[in-house]
Image (cartoon, rainbow, N blue to C red; front, side):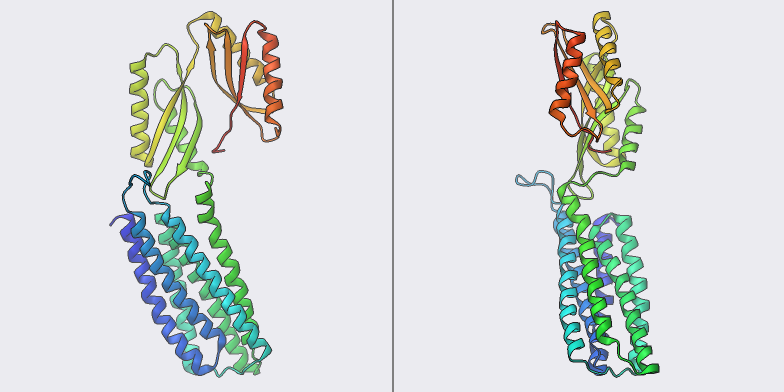
Length: 367
């Protein structure tokens, strides 16, 4: 079963469980005159709606690429997760209003044996459902399933607090229903905001996992002829589509065919192992011409003495133009990049007054 089918099947399980729980909670909550149980029933229905949205979003995200969306529709999954988070927030706000009214105009809940049994069953079902859905979401890298699973686990804790309220009411005849309703609402609202963060970050361009970047570097460096990996940039167009680019260092003695063969093998491997569509650029390491290698070594040595430079790469000498070009990645402490580049340019220009020096400030997008 592929990823999408597993997400859809898991969502259907969530729908069945939540609709069943919502029905029993609504009936029991109404009979017991308990706002907390009724709000739990409403929350279960919102969870079922979330699963429906997850199914629709998953199906839409699998639509093939077209002229308007050349990278596919995978990011619809992030929009789905955002919609689910908004539903959770709406449920929390509604619950807060109802619970506040209950505090102002309190009523005495009537807990029975049936009420307590339903609450206990609800806690058990929600714990099992939440663990199952969240684990599936983590396995399938689905923000929507993770949000639904976390919400279910949260509901279990909320319902458990309702059980505590019932116990206090039966033993000490003190009603905490309204107070618990307010606390539940605040926690639901907080959870909703937390659920929003992950999909919004993905849409804004969140940093790719450092572990994935390390694996990519290790894989590329394993190819004979590669002497460095730089400028890794990865764009996430959904859980299944990552498109990016990187540069490799190769010796200037390699010819165009050898470079072509090398970069083709690397792109094929990265696509096969990580599902990444990668474009590869090349930096040449000067090894033959003594003049160029001398300039290269002297420039790299001079830049290496700067503690506020974290990486140097991309050195190239244009002999016909008498021009030196090099890329530097500044440390995070550098705030004025323009002045920083001018200072380095002047320093290198002093070493080679007859050459034109170009220092390009680069950035590390994956560290």
